[in-house]
Image (cartoon, rainbow, N blue to C red; front, side):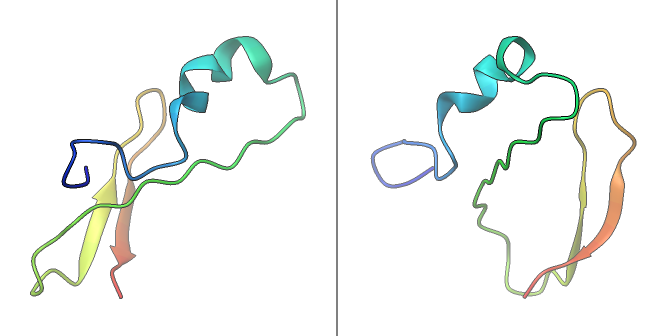
Length: 58
């Protein structure tokens, strides 16, 4: 979130993913997060998918 509590991300398009994405189509979604300086990697957890572990932070 930014200083005004707005999402630093690709927006509300993710809400419509289920209805608007057809078979074989792709959509890019991004989000920005603040992490402590000493964090070198993260695990990404998305509901319905296996976790993606050890993503490097640069």
